[in-house]
Image (tube, rainbow, N blue to C red; front, top):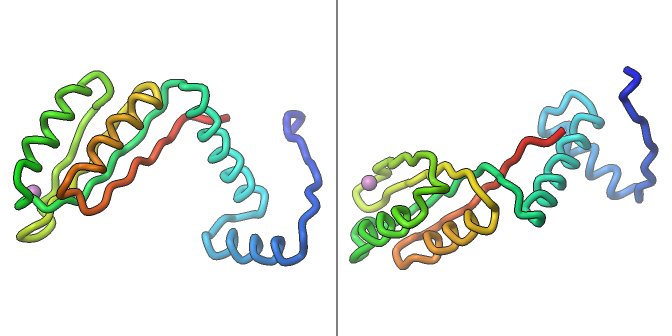
Length: 135
Ligand code: NI
């Protein structure tokens, strides 16, 4: 345990109580494990800023009856072959499709791709989730 560092954090009582509820409700085994995850999350954000290679997913829900939506989604993805690893398509109901695109590359390029897809007419909801390997 020589590489474990312990540090104290001062918190306002209300913030502390809210955090106690948070980590217990999420099922963390300890406060420390919850804090480690929050720190990792912050570090992933920091990696984005440095434009390092990250992994992520772009999730889209769209109405496939929207004119040109299928063609537009495909055209955009073909321009970003270098960052797209894989994609999955699910027919949700009579009108809607779910698409999940796995990506790997520089954050700026991934963000650019996600913005192009998410802002397309017919896309009802879209979200980019970035992840990276943290200590
Ligand atoms: Ni479909």
